[in-house]
Length: 135
Image (cartoon, rainbow, N blue to C red; front, top):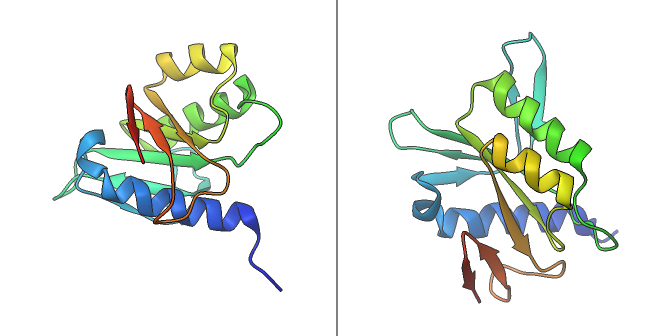
């Protein structure tokens, strides 16, 4: 059975973020993992940016939504995850970007919007972030 598109999207996003890690102030991005929160819960995150020698951590959430932008609720959930795991910020990766309410939450919670085409591969992609476009 072919791999699910959302899973491939997450893997491609983690790979590409790792290629541009320095733009986000970290040394590398790691793939999907479980991280412990101060609340006593665990969170499954799609990827994690890490500074060399510890320090800065960025939580990554990928949503391959193709009909509408990312909602305020999804962005708020990532904001809480960032706070609970003690991360320095987050990245929300999606094909269509954030809705208006989500943009406000992202700005307050240090979440960077990354636009990645829905059918991107590790060699054929359009990645937009921080007022840059990488093809």
